[in-house]
Length: 464
Image (cartoon, rainbow, N blue to C red; front, side, top):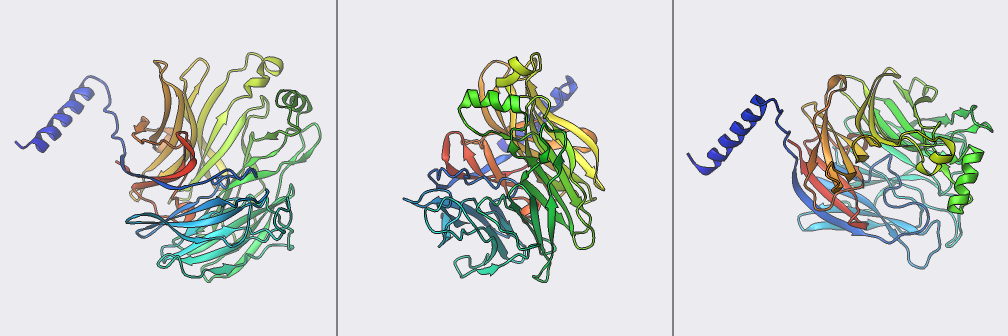
């Protein structure tokens, strides 16, 4: 018997003994095929970093090519519009810059792609003079050819309802239905609404509208609940938007207490999670916003993370919850337990039909704290969650790693496995079908590592 066959036999025998002893075999870990630096950056001090458009993605695969959009801080310019976009392609010799913005902007630029080789970049160039703090902007979508990304791009102008006066604070979202060659773009207008524009397979912006924010009637002073960082999914003209509350702290006692702690005049609330949807963006209006999670009572925190649309028409949502603001607990809600959880729900026909906790940590339990996560769907129909984990293990050893968990029907999930990355990602995006990338057994990640926080890195993982 050769060595390779002997090793395989012994591994199989070990798994058999584990099962016979009552212990399920640990699932195999993904294989790390690449870890690379894409680019480095300096902080622009304008409130928006390279992952600020977190509801969309800045990494796309088209065929054999992988593209990344990045940010470059412009020297000697004052915020807010003091960065420019960059477009990279991965080659046999590494990551190569293809094009650089000739203008100025504030925020990162989401990417989307189609299998036919079209690559799209959502941009928001300012219309202000250099060193002007803020002002009007004109959102566009740029179209590149994946086969020749250095060639001149086409400028596409989404059609918006009522000609809104957009600014550098765009909170842009971009989603692609790659199979059908269609796009959905979102752009915010102050604290009033999210505006949307839909481009069909013929290349025309044929539908547009306004997603008015829900009213916070239960606040001390009722106000619209601005919903930001939209996670968008589009398939066969069904569209979903998952967004998080982003308003100045509405509870006056909490606001005053936090000002005394931080000496800041503002503090924002990210603790109410809403979604809206339409089964057909051309013929049906978006439904009223539905609230699916809240940490309002204890001043907690929610981070909207991802959407996956199953082949059978269900929408899967992923988010992270922190139960409370520990700084306020002693004064305002003593005795409340501090927990951290990664949560998942399933929506059919606009209704939440299943809701689960995938991972939970906190006082009285595990200290392995789940953070940012993303779905990864494979061509054979499996669904995984890739996420960051920090804190410490049962022995008190510090943890900073990425893990992978398979999601199964009926709220079941596999045991999470550690991914042996040299530079784990604490913040990241993935090449997702929401950006037009195909389902794949290859998981491709763009993000930051705590080891090098001002470096954007790429990793490629082959799933079991």
